Image (spheres, rainbow, N blue to C red):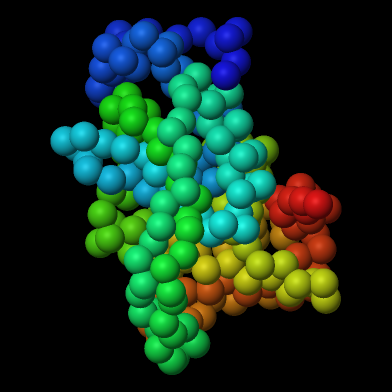
Length: 232
């Protein structure tokens, strides 16, 4: 955590429900430009459970996401000045529709980072409309505060979002999301930032989500703009 951060004054954020634990930990609420990257990570990897009773922000990922989740944890804790509970959770056997066919998954370990903070969860909900249930996830949009923000803030948000994108050596990029509206907003932001077309959105086979596809020219430009990160 960044000990130089100043804890936010609850009086400046009447819509945020600070608990005594939030105040003890010194929860910090940044401006949009300061949290845009982490907010993008949240829209790709995180969920808010048990809202508003006992809200919890939880990042879920596969075992191979361990290094990425280490970076996520560091970023979140530096920006909001709170610590996480980190654990490996055994996901039970399940059946999913992938590419139009049923696929069975055995029990497997899932990386999980959990933040128990009513203040952080109500901030995300009230200031950005962060979804808190499956229906809202399917109808999610890029927050208006981000869409109407400065270009650099928009770039940082997209950089966080695209940590979940699949990038191929030949320059193709795929990014999937359950909300078609969210992908349309991402596409519009990339266009407004000067990322050249074509960018296409298609419903994935199986019907559970949508996919944004970019070919080589826009992918290369996005990397040059710093919107897509390349990690070792």
